[in-house]
Image 1: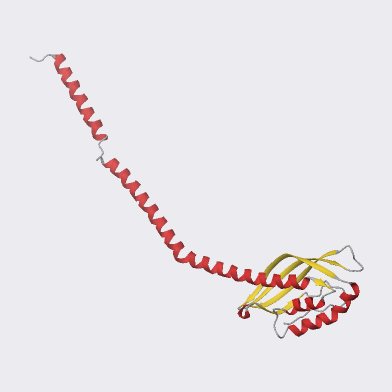
Image 2: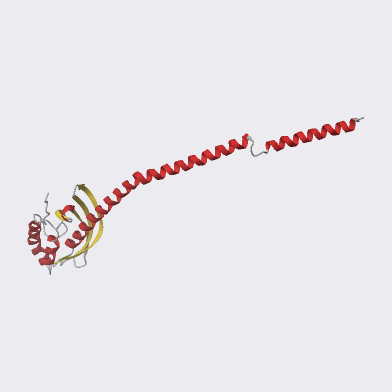
Length: 211
């Protein structure tokens, strides 16, 4: 005969066993709740991988071409600025005792049409330079491509000049500005230059105005 105590104990054991199984089932790895979490995580990872892959393909396909074009343009502009700067520095260095060197600096690297105009500039300004015992040194400040049209490049060049003469033996500092037009197709031949002679003594120092 089963007494009440045994019955109560059996019922308690059955309840504990049921609760244990329920807890075990909730922790079971194969439970649909855990599967849902893993599925969401997998989808998130796949989406991230797809986004990164698409971004890399886009960058490789389009941005590489844009970057190459930008580098080419910057390299070309740097070459134009270098050529214009070298010319501006040469023509800014003046010594009344060697005007032939200044003449050479003015005409070296310029077009056949421009050279005679620069020769005339030396003939006009030269006597003033000798009379005033004029000398000048120069230092590049900046150069920048201001205009392009096919192979035609226009560069603004700024030069810091320090000049001396009989009237200013201690020296005078001034900034000379040159507008140098060049033809890339003919190895950066200078086809026009403005500003030459602007800071030199003598009224009416010539500009070229070749355009």
